[in-house]
Amino acid sequence: MATLLSLNVGMPKDVSWRGRTVHTGAWKSPVDGPRMVRRLNIEGDGQGDLAGHGGEIRAVLVYQLQSYQYWQKQLGRDDLTLGSFGENFTVDGLPDDEVCIGDRYRIGEAEFEVTQPRVTCYRVGMRLGEPAMASLLVAHRRPGFYLRVITEGHVQAGDEITLARKGPEELSVADTDALLYLPDRDPAKLRKALNVPALSPGWQQSFRELAAAPQPRQEPGWPGFKTLRVARIVPETPTVSSIYLDTTDGTPLPEARPGQYLSIRLAISDAAPAVRSYSLSCMPTATTYRISVKDEPHGQVSSYIHATLRPGDLVDITSPRGTFVLEESTRPVVLISAGIGATPVLAMLHQLAATRDPRPVWWIHTAHDRAHHAFADEAHTLLAQLPHAHEHIYYTAETTPQRDEFHIAQGRPTAQSLMALGIPTDADAYLCGPPAFMDDLGGFLRDHGLRPEQIHTEQFSALPAINPGLTLTAAIRPHQPPGPTDTGPLITFARSGITTAWSPAHASLLDLAEACDIPTRWSCRTGVCHTCITHLVAGDITYTTPPLELSEPGTILICCSQPTTEVVLDL
Image 1 (cartoon, one colour):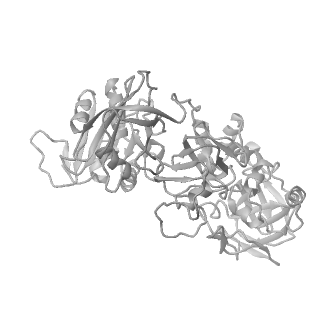
Image 2 (cartoon, rainbow, N blue to C red):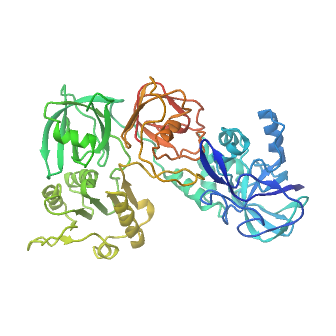
């Protein structure tokens, strides 16, 4: 018979960590006597980050005495008091390899249902003073698990725990955790997981994505950078020019998928070379790529390209890469862009026109005015080659459409105007433009009936940060790290425009990015969750802590990696 040994609670508090402040409820302490357990929480308890912890699905966290004893031996610790793993219930029994998702238990007056394993989070390591703890919990198959409250009631230490009902499929907590975080997944167990109604929606979505994920494809191309020659430069508008790039030796260029981008490295001054990424704006030929660049105010690289780059100049280029690509499908296609965001979707339009694709296609573009509408004639000609094309242009400046320009309107796309275009709800939509534009248009499409997985977006600015639990501070423009310049290999953050020398003072590439105030995305910080996955544009790295599962080729986990050569990251 399992027993509730300790009932632990604690309210969120601010904790100093690595020079920052984390708002966390990981500090739990045992309490005497009964406590009321309600749908969202135990009386006197709270969670600091409700995006990953707490709520109805994760109301109560459970950890086992046997796991305490295991870690005491593994870590050589004798100071692990009950509640140290951030759990609400410390129990004798209920091992992770026997408890199943969907099992129901009665404890005191209350009844509970097992919903998911513990979230792999850096805060358990912070609480225990063991930075790798999130990884160890998964690798050693001892994560602990969350409970949903089925019947509210009082519980207290000493209460017996009785099994009320076994969950369907009998998929254990340890096996469920391994399905998400460890390699060599068992497809049969993955199908089982999708048949457990009690499994939390977030984990169900992750397993659906894993089940539907195609096999990773090996992209053609070359490692790092290759020298190409500027063949010609063609002005598209007063602020946009297209640059055609040829090989120097006539060898064929690798095929690119419509929507992909390449990175260009330019020696602009005596400082370190600058790296930027630009979408291919048409389908490549055997020997030519085309990128199209807007001359941005205060843009170091774009200004150099417009003012200084000339035909015949040599530039360093990476192979095309990126997952924002036109998918093979029979569903209608919606291509939406604003300004220079037209470039990747224009490449998609080239592909559709080249194959005379029979699918309905909507081309929706927003520009300032006619003079600043890049690729207007080119896109119009391509659309005329498609049997079921719909063209809709919006000019934000005042304009008077000519008699035959029924496809041009003044203003910006709205929910009402998109609905009037007759876009079917089974369409695949591809959006590129400023972040606010994509947020607004993506929301309009979701409200119209498109599912989130049907809406694909591309963003070349720094991605929004994911830093769970950190107290928000004012955004700071990326900069060189503080302190003296080191002599290590150069690290370039291509999206943020920062190149700096590596220093062994940094524990990882993530640590260096944070020192530069570059927006970062992470959760476990130990190579488990893959939140920090980043495209490696060029260079080589080594893992200080081997990830439990390697990321796809061409990507790395920056939370546990250091450079062995000069490195360029898509960050």
